[in-house]
Image 1 (tube, rainbow, N blue to C red):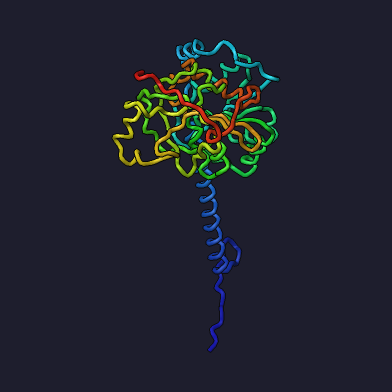
Image 2: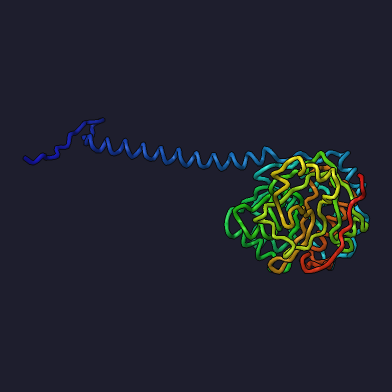
Length: 344
């Protein structure tokens, strides 16, 4: 026997309405609520991510620290700019937020102002990575940025196009702790963070791999000791001496600097070419542009160290295209490194 569908009806406020319609309408409203709640949750998560960075934005540098920076600034640049130069200083962090960012932002801005080498705009919003906006700049400096993830291909392409126009990129310290989902960005910088056996409380020895290079002029041809945190780089991401010109590296002939490795057998067996070799500063050519990177800059005090400020200035002038510097990869040249003094 066939079972026939017989709709039931209900009278509500003078209207005759099918019970089945009521069920459908109730389900539809429930579905809409789910969609609305889901959309709200997504919006809240996005807002929370933004709020998390907003919450971590750094306090302004204190006046006494500004004085320290001012006293350490070089009086002039090695060369005069070929034209008015503009640097975009970007400092956003999606990962660890370095307490030295404010010192770095201030030091770089004042470095350009005092020497006349460049002017600097400070920014932390991804929207600045727009092709039209980047036409205003001659170099981009990543100041201790961490885990950056550009929001779309247009922003990534804007950076690559910037380099193809023979412009420059510079990176300070955590600039190598970025672009984990963008291989060209990681390669541009030269390597990616993989821990720091040399902690910020230690004073470490540094050798000049290329003592006569113009970007090492700040160190007067001598190795040195400096208190800062120093990274090692993931072997799969560090591009090596076939692509970069290494300026500084850790002087591991000193027990104090070799100590962290001796205390950790796993670390002693890992990382970079030639067993243990820890580059610290380098330059390179990339996509028609220029790159300068230094790992110096975790500690605030680094930004009022005269020799390091001069090193930053020379590296930036290279990235800007004003200071000529040989970027022939280290593997293709012969240089005798200059070690650090026996003691700090």
